[in-house]
Length: 188
Image (cartoon, rainbow, N blue to C red; front, side):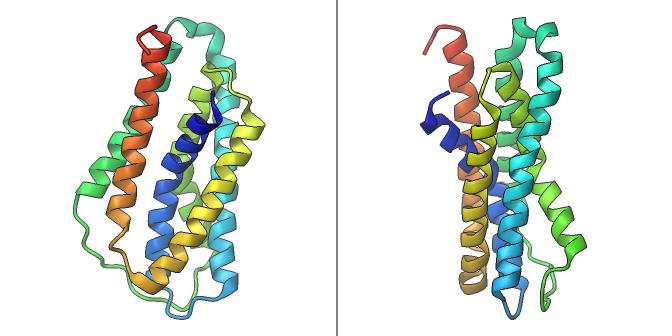
């Protein structure tokens, strides 16, 4: 897998984290360095760990499904991307109350929720023989930076970028999945 493809996947899976960080930035009245850093690091950490867990799971199953591995990778990326598009184009009503800071429990729940798609990507990585440690570190770093930007932008500008970020992330994941499939079928 090329570095560019990996970066596109990292940007795609970090779109949810960006959107949630944007929303949290909007709803934290007095954003501190501690809260911005906690959101950024927690989202990055979970986005980095989930592909490793997915890769471990996928590695156990790889021998049983090598005939259809490219279809699985495509299906997972297309499903994640489609879900992101559906959520981005759905209702955008903002009902979240403002708060003084983000709590640990909420931070952990949001970190897990925004990184489930990275687990599925990790499963796909196992079928593609991707070097998981560099891939996971890339995803973690990109997500941490994107999330920090999201929380800062959200605190300053509001949620007007949330929908477009999820649309772009969804389209990128679908395109990468399609490229993997076409490459494996010899079309690309």
